[in-house]
Length: 81
Image 1 (cartoon, rainbow, N blue to C red):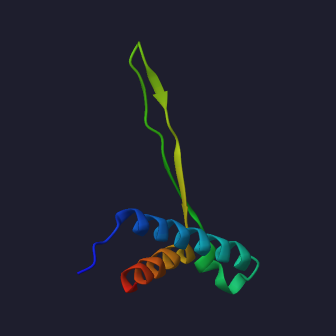
Image 2: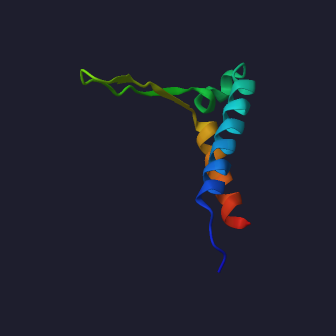
């Protein structure tokens, strides 16, 4: 049994997400495919002020159906290798 590398899985998923987002951006002018290219923004902003240290981090994730399909294909390709 092959040992799975979690770092490679994450890399595959990020690349799949990126390729899916690029394809969605290319297909945005096609009105018939708007259900695949419509994006949802997920935002998370933890912050704290503790007198001696303060932080403010903002993480934004932009998801659409094509990027999710890209992630699924990437995981499938990873499991296949």
